Length: 227
Image (cartoon, rainbow, N blue to C red; front, top):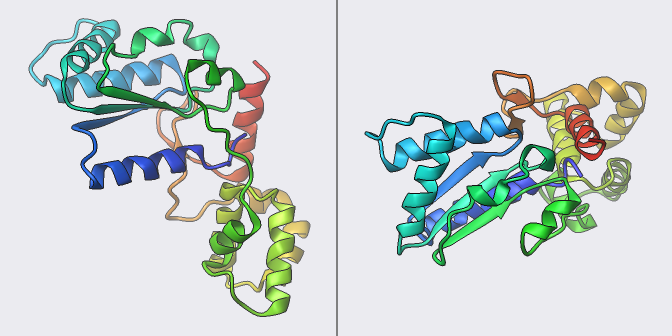
């Protein structure tokens, strides 16, 4: 579901692979819609062959596939937010034919597991959630009890926990005070995003990336599951 940390986990994997120089190139593709994926493919094509003129979006896909299929070095394509399979009945044609490359997909749609080996993300374990919320698992007993209540309240979802942490930090709240504030102003708290917020996404019908708050994420998740 939304907020489980699929995109952030994929980003962290890409960062580690880049630091270790495991791939010659890593391409991050926005697969939330056909238009956004075409746009990402065009960007990748221009990076691979800057002087090549592209007649249409399909030519960009063909160019990327052709170039990467010939590489003898390792490469990685990340298809992020492939949540709407009805937009991509031909998704396999976006994958280059190569024994040297890898394709990583993040998706809310259970059917995407048919495309290859899958890893299902669920909620965080308690210790992980405490570390994310408190940036440490230590602290006063009452604060730890309140922290565990917050984790339970938010379903142990990473995005929800991180948003709560940012909200608590911005308002300099005690954890007990956050619980009270959350119950009193639940909807407004769930809609708030910090000024510096890594969770962003190009939503359908939007021209610019949107900061993802908890309500936005769950609304998108609901839409993805009821197509």
